[in-house]
Image (cartoon, rainbow, N blue to C red; front, side):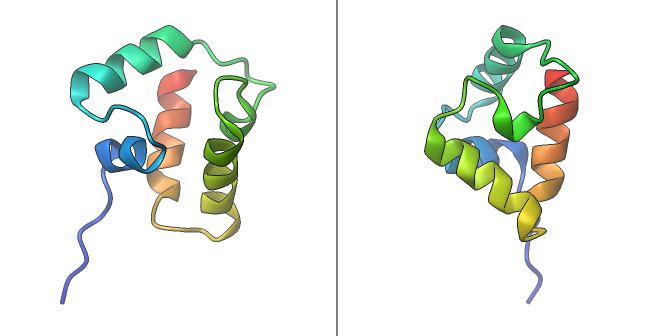
Length: 76
C-alpha cells in the first residue's frame, strides 16, 4: 500500500485553517513577509496549538515537514 504525501491544503486543514487554494493564498499574502529572524513555528499569528503542531513536525521529522518548509518559504 502506497501512502500519498500530504499536500499544503491538508496542512492548513490540520492547522484548523481554511484550506482551499484561495484561502491559502490570502493567508500567505496577509502574513508575509515573515522576518528572517523568526522561525515559521514562532510566528505571532499562530495559536499555541498551531505552533506546537508545527514544532512537532520538525522534531519528529513528520510527513508534514516538507509542507511546513514550503509554507515557510512562501511566507518569506
